[in-house]
Length: 347
Image (cartoon, rainbow, N blue to C red; front, side, top):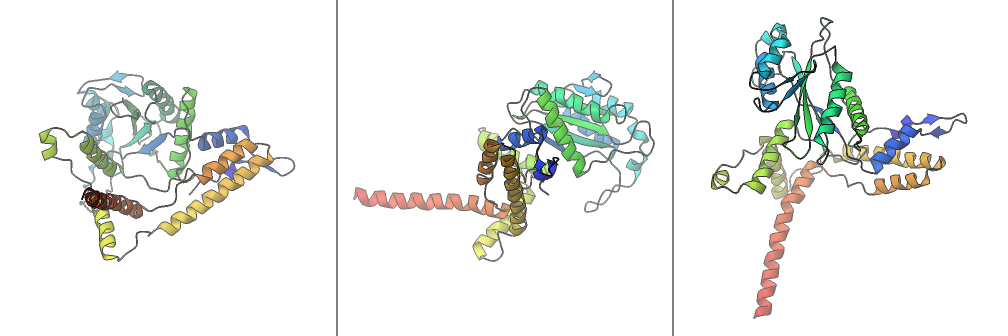
């Protein structure tokens, strides 16, 4: 659900709704398109082997340093096993339950949460790491064991944070991460980045006019591999061995093509709900502009109205994929038409 910005205001003695300095700063960052932070949970190991494998992966098998909650820096192939042993994960009994069948939900409780803290390309990596250190200390220190690794091998610097789920001193108490938790963490991480002197914001994507749901990690990584292959595959071996396509995206594209060819089905399924959300967001922004204007913030109110006017139109994933499929077809038809016209002119 979209953030109701107006609800963050406060009523003064006259009963008139007013925004405080903090709310006005948030609005300014949003309409000014300040870079958005990203905080997400990317899974979590349910047995010692899974946790060990993830720690080895984020440490690039010993090549990158791992920082722990005790202020230590570990590096090398033995770092992951040292952390797993120090956290005494083998004592967590839930991991010894039978593993589920392939199509069944895993009944085993997570031993750790894998969290990613990320900033857009161009952000100084050392400042992302500094903010992540404070974030981890404020949320988990002396309660839940944790370790972190900075990654700079992609344009956007990010920190992988692994947090033990069981409380260190209160048996039975576990770390649960809910939607509200993630929202609060995003706001906190954005504030910590601003303390580092980096412009950062944290608003729900619907408020920014972004209706599209983000891809799950596995799909995202597969799509990124395909894009990289298309842009960078120059060797004969790479051309012979392209990355595997996402089965999810392949099935989705197949469904879209079937609709386009047969005319049966709807590309706008789900669009009504998306339109409803957009209408709520638009009404909220208009109310925000009204409150700002009454407060004497006419310039900012105008920025809000321009921001709302420039929001992209609502479009389902199926409609977006269909448009991308049609575009090359249109281009080829135009090229054929131009070639025929050119041929007639030559004769």
